[in-house]
Length: 282
Image (tube, rainbow, N blue to C red; front, side):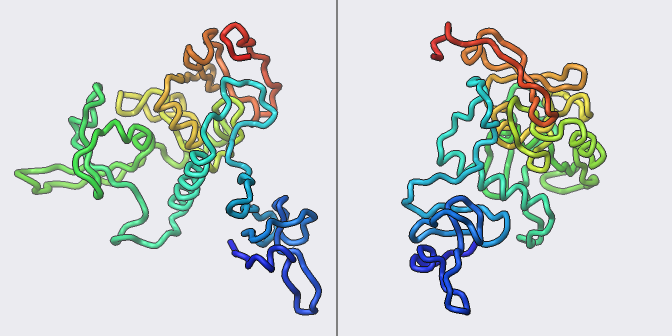
């Protein structure tokens, strides 16, 4: 991202030959765009770059809502505020960067979240297990339900006190071959009308792993971080029917409890869902 001085952004800057050249446009076209840039704006120079509106311009960054703009299903509409979308977008970028393995080491380790808990707490079904992280004291293990969907696990055996007797090999729940199968099957986020690409998605245990759910393709689906969080922290539910993930909205959103699926990634016709006029939506 290249910040441009106000005078250069407004006029496009000067080239070596003394002629004006456009540095960035409001339409996000980068060099050579046909719309006037914001005064004092910040642009990303390069083909296919993302235009970042200038502070105070009143414009919003595009692409933060993963729901298909052609969708008319208000049950799946993105109800996050603009600041929430910006925060989630930053988190998505950080998670994607962390998965590349190209980040510098921190304390001798790659960027990661380290959660320490006991096997007993990990196997609890009442949500009252305790976890420890390097930045806090004891916290509820339930705070990390989403992270526990697809962690890397290292098992330690303790003796007296904190004496470590043995250290097991680090294990990932979903293996690379399983992830490839999920990418081929789901093609992207499975949530209805979500357009998020597969590379932005996380593998989700439909029956939670800590509740005995198996780590296999018949208990997994790809979800973007927004919808992964939504499934874990709301009353939405999902199930696989003949290998296709289907979702049921909370009763307060859709009393008909109509099953919904993603048709966007597979190029299928969008279903006509029941009108919600009787529930006061119009």
